[in-house]
Image (cartoon, rainbow, N blue to C red; front, top):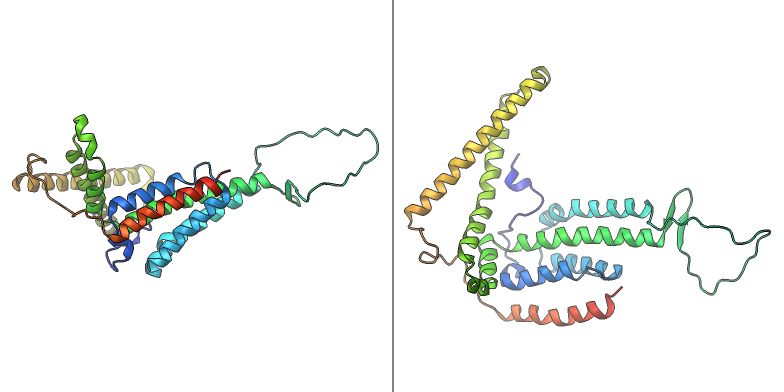
Length: 290
């Protein structure tokens, strides 16, 4: 069991380096906010279009199939199950219809072929339930996968460097931007250490071949309390080692001891990506309105 490689989301793809890797992190962050904001109050077909754009970006970037399957496979299953459950659930418009005719049946020709009920064979499926299913399933997919694609093609140092540059105007409000970004960088770098400690503890428990059935509930809880205590102890020791290493290297004031993790510069393709935002939002307000 390797937790550092078996997690299906949130990992950075170091190799191969795609054209998405080469884009400026600030440009990718702007596009991430665009993907997250444009589906809000949009037409269901627009939301499906955004899903298609994300899939085309993944294919165009030539991300390996093994990574694509690991990152997107479970998410597609989750979205399909969400759509199916929402489609067969009540649509929220449960109105008790009262017959208007006293006797007989009067059939009148309908002006259009519109039919609110799409399927009525033991389970009622309406247009609104299908629309709600599309909305919920696509929003879940866009929210998770767009963020994951950003993390997949952007190193933690690039993320913090881009955020620090975008939050630079807040320095006039006396906000400690450098300290916040340094804390964020250390937090992102500390996540693999947490996974490594969890992995080591899991392996140590498995090698001891503990018979959990014979232990009982009370002794099982005692074992897990010992494991949690050991995990916290190891993490605190790792944090102390990082603090000592930073102090030895002179990181006493972030404004005086700044390290440039990543050199920010806009290339030609960054300007092209920013220019595409204009027709994208124009299409959103023209065709994506409800």
